[in-house]
Each structure stands twice: as C-alpha cells, then as structure tokens.
Image (tube, rainbow, N blue to C red; front, side, top):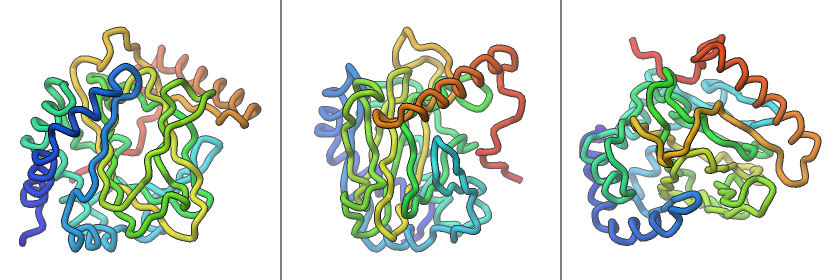
Length: 273
C-alpha cells in the first residue's frame, strides 16, 4: 500500500463513515459546552507504528517552555520523515473535511496548509500544557478557528502516564474532564471562547506523540464569539501563576488591538519553499 495522503485519507474516511452515527451523537451531546468526540482504532496498527517511529528526535524540534507550557513541537514538515507530512495532510483532504462537517453539523470548513499551531508535538516526563483558549483566528486573522483535531500515536500509552487531554466545560476554576491520549485515538473538539482545555503533566519516562490539525471557517462556532489571543490560566491550585497568566493575556490582547497580527509574526507555521 502506498503511504501517501490520499490513501491514508481513504482509511480515515472509511473508519469515520462507519462510525458516523455514533460520532455525531457524541459531538451533539456536548454542543452546549465544549463539543467533542473521539474514535479509537482510526488506522491499521502497522501504519500507526510506522507513524510513531517517524517522529523526529527531540533535538530536531522546537522546545516551548514557560509557565504556560512545556513541550516539543515540529511544524517544518519537510525536515522530517515524509510520512508525517502525509498523515497531517491526509486530514486536510476534501472528502475528510466534508465528512467531518456532516458529523459535527458545521459548514464551510477550511484546512490550514500553514499548520498554524498545528503539526506534531511530543511531551516527555514533566511536560504539560496549562488550561488555555486557542487563538480565535488563523495566522492572518481572516477566519475563525473552529475545530481542533488531535491524533495520538504512542503505543501502549496508559492513562496513568499523564499527557492526557483535559476539557474544562465549566471554566479553568472547576474540575476538568479527562480524555485518555490513547494510541490510535482521534479526538475532535470545537474551539471557541469557552473551550478551555489543557494537557496533564506527563509522569512516565515515555514520549507522548500527537499529530495536530485545525479547521477554520468564515463564521465562528458561536455567534457571540469575539477575537482573542491564545489565553492561558493557572490550574485551580496555581493562584500566583494564574495572576501572572491573566496579566500576560491582557497585555498581549492590548497589543493586538493596535497591531492586528501582532508585533512579531508567530513562527509556528509551515514555511513551504
């Protein structure tokens, strides 16, 4: 089998189509807060293992470390094993987007060939991602961010290892809902002004690997949505950090009121030659 984006997309399409009724029910059930769904066994096991083994070495990625987050990301896909780029862009094939539109009840979704905040990520022991809202728009601030697609590929990832997705439907001061970063699991979640989410600290001496995509639209998921920068908060027990992150978000938001796309362009995008 040829492992290109078209053939991989066909496998993804068949699995989503097969479970589309259940997936639609999952997503619709959570529509009033953070709509989301997940599907297991998305791709054949031998392909998932190849994807996992294709992930770059730590020194080939970009370290993002602050009070907000600690993780490794890769977005310049032409520097890595070609299989990773094919997998990422398989999720951007028209038939996949159309099917996900039907499942999620959304219209006119657009993939992001720039991989703005997308690509691949790796999280190792003690890595984390604090509660946050994703930037509401694409890199040019023309379209609304609508869906976040997270595909996990680390074999035998136990929920006790940490590194799991956390959704905070009642805000970052309440209790989160944990979604296991299980190998070969695809999670799709809506992104909007209330879609607070995070990743729990990794506790195992293993690397959690994830393939990420975002879909955008000309209209927001909720009509009353407003532009916002990526906004971080502290966890309920992180009082001092929460104050700092609030000030940080407020400051960056004021800057964006003056400079539409920021003073410095976000480097997290795929610069194709």
